[in-house]
Every structure is written in structure tokens, then in C-alpha cells.
Image (cartoon, rainbow, N blue to C red; front, side, top):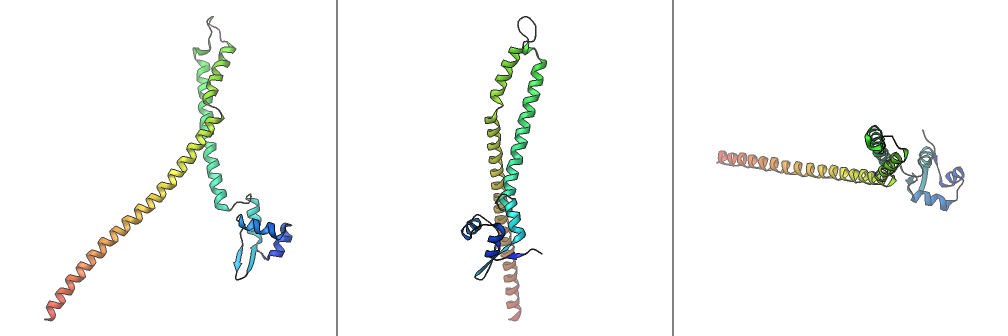
Length: 177
């Protein structure tokens, strides 16, 4: 079981002032408020410090974005390498005399690098972020559409139930007379 520390104890543990402790709390350091007192879970605080002072959810989102970026960068680099290997085998690098010319090769590679540079990786990163946002919006839309559909279906069920109950009520009234 993790140990709960008071503010004074956690200040000594972290070797910080109370003001710094309050700033950490505002930045997302985990704490438990119990009435007027505030307690800190020592293990949770250590985990928070290891995570680079981000809460676990933000850290997970950041890692997911970085993984997407790495996949996009890897794709770009694979395309770049395969394109270079393909072009090395072609006759594009043969000069007028029929020999492979290093200057022609370098010139072609420089032209290729204009298309596959850091800005291109940044573009892929932006596309990945945009796709992530669209995916999250789709999830929200699906949840909204599903909720709306469920409400609509429940309304139909209740209408049918009311109609059936009303018919049964009318038949009960006619039987009583």
C-alpha cells in the first residue's frame, strides 16, 4: 500500500518549498483532498515526476502522437531509400559518354532530398495529428449518433407500450361496464 504524506512531509521528500508544491499541484501533481487537509500519495507523486510532470493520460496521448510520427517518418524514409535504389539502377545517372557519373548522381539525389526533407516529415506529422483529431471526432460522432438512435428507438418502444397499455385499459373499462 502506498504511503500518504502531508504537505510538510512531501515538501521535505521533494526538497521544495510550499509555493513550488502548490505550483506542482496546479500543473497536475496528484493529491487527495480530505476535508480541509491535503494528502499526497508518495508512489503517485514519484510516478508523476517520472512521467515528466504530465499526468498519465497526457503522456499517453503524447506517446501515441510520437509513435504516429515515427511510423510516418519511417514510411517516408523507406520510400526515399527505395526510390534512390530504384534510380541508381536506372539509366538516369548515366552521362552522355555512357558512364555513371557521381556528379549526376549527386544532383539527382539533391533533387530528391527537396521532396523528402524535414519539412516533409513535419507535413506527415501534421497529417497524423489531423487524422487523430478526425478519428476522435468520428468517435464522438458515433457516440452521439448511437445515443440519438437509442433514444429514438426507446421513444418508439415507449409509444408502442403506451398504445398497448391504452388498448388494454379501454378493454378493461368496457369489460367493467
